Image (tube, rainbow, N blue to C red; front, top):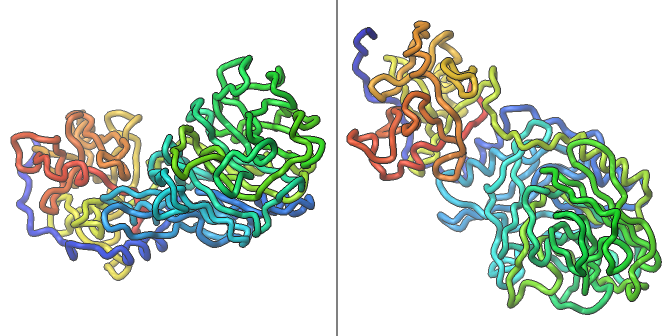
Length: 518
């Protein structure tokens, strides 16, 4: 029998509304639970050393130059249509995903532009109203979270109706028959046969201007000329008026379906006589050369126009919409025809970057703070109340006392009742854990009983609102950790208790896993 629990005083709380500028400033201070390690060398440094410098470099996950410290991409949130740039954590490092999480808490965000890291100004904008103009829309910013070198990052997850473009014909992108190389990291887990998931050189007028007007990597299950072997997706070349698996319309028997979650895709074309297609698992291993030989008949010389496309074919998307699906993590376009040694070094760098589908911060031993995402309470964090054993939410900021910061910091432990889930131990009350009692949350010492273990075990899931994480009660699986009137509960989406109200339940049960305050 548990002892009677004391009554609760009014929990600490701050201002009901948090300004977006404060949220972004905070995110900059506590950007990542793990350290961000800047690269000694990145792909565009390797290309430059090989005599084929990057003329455009795009990524939502990391810097492509070791010295790059600027923005990677821009997001816009639907709640008030404001914008925020998502930068790297440090020069040469990974994206500051925490800044996006804070800015987009309680609403939906879209990626409106992907910045060019070369300084040439070849920044990609979505092909729609508010972007370059056109019929497409910007991709949702939070569809897929991954990790790069242990740091959380978001992909550019393109669905039909999303695409990006910029006219780079006067800002360094090769034109005519000039030699060019390209690579991208994409995903074998998200592709279709719609036209055309491309990254690379395209027309400046959004029209199909004939053979050789494009020189772009295509990654899809689209079998343009027929006779394909396997199910794809394949690394092919979109040279306009055809997707080429090799040097002819006939299927190239050396092609291989690339089904890894992370795939490196490469295309290089000297513009007059030769091209090559390569691919690899972006997490490990070396490149496979699918084709290296002459250009297809009718494509010698090339007639590249120098715009850049991402996510669609060249004759899109001013009055028509993109039909393709695909994922983009990073990519670059270079001036010149890269050597095989340079290609291999770039692949080695990509593999060393540490792409992973594991984006959870709930590693045993990790310290974190849990930030509310409901619009009322984005400056509030789950914490134990210093005057009793209740678990509540209250405001924490850089000026808060060391005690308040520690009260809002938790240590992740393997779930006491199920090691596949988690338990949250207080950072400043050793041996005491969050547990529910009569569906309310308390901080109590582990008494070693199976009841306590079950009450103190929670299973992390994707946020019920589409943001952050939600924590499912182990022994009441329809209930999740929720704040209601600034007090912590486990609550279901509808029920007899006041805290089970369906009003903003999804938001109240969704939390950001932020860097620890203590």
